[in-house]
Image 1: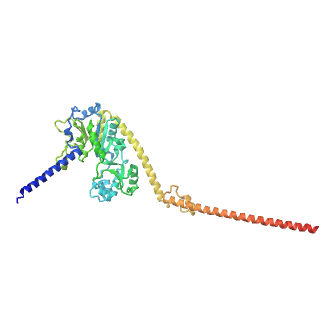
Image 2: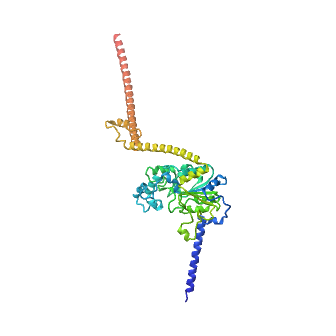
Image 3: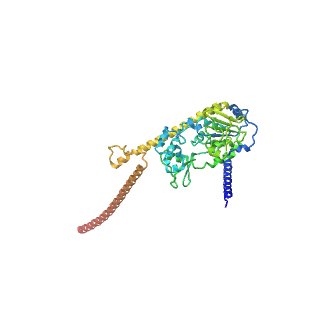
Length: 450
């Protein structure tokens, strides 16, 4: 029996199935990530006179640009002084070495976190929101919001600096989550920022008040899904964008980097970065599936919308603000906000130092007692007034014992009083009897005289 035809048929069927699977994957990624979506959207007339920063400024000031979307990465927070924990030799990296991380990024792996949460919370203490001040770039974003021009800000950062700068929740899309809220990995109970902060700065591994499960800040770890808000807003906001500004990101992490292709084809796009990024896809897996992103076309011959401003984020935002006529306004905003934050940080530091000092004095309470003190009452008087915890319980115990002693004495006084009363009654009875005897004697004496 000749099986060649059957084998060929089987082989053909397998190839057809593979083609179908690849096509299904292509369609899925196109829908979810927006690949090549702009090809189906007809381009309108160019909104820029030329592909340069001067045309971007003129477009913003024209009044036609009313809905700006911004995308940001770690570059906008560099000048805030946030340490790079991934760089060997840094102090923070050295602090993490004792946990023997298989690689620096293991700290954001969910399985590793479940077994060794200490490593992540060591990092969290160093990077925790409130320890750093927003940069000029963050305040430029706030200025866009105050002028009613910022439709949405998409960020890869988890440092919370956008919130500290004053951007409201409804403007923010935190693609990789944030410290703003936390959830129990077991029962999903939610906790606020201050709850988590108290535990992190007390070097306590946060556990759930309800079920004692491990509590994790709502930042996206490897193996976790991005927030629903990210996908929802990327689909609904980008079609309405009048301008896209991209700052401080390498545009290599999916699906964030593909957002640039979600903007309409006639929407100008400004990249503010030290080097050109985002020119087509660099993802090998997606390329193998036949998927590609158009990316940013700075060097395209017919480019009429993509502009590259080669600056670090802070100086680039200052330059853009100056050209828009907002330079002094931005400087004053930075100055006033930093002064306010300095006062808040100073107050918080003083409160923390006072609390730490109080706790130290409490722990050294026994050593601080005068050596000449004798007697329970003397010890009680000379104890520091800020005793807490076990010392407070001891005080309450001693006061309770004293109260019992006073009650016993009071009872004894009462008993004595009763005894005196009884004695007084007996003496009164004796006095009456003596009076009767005296009267009898007097009667007998009178009879004798007669």
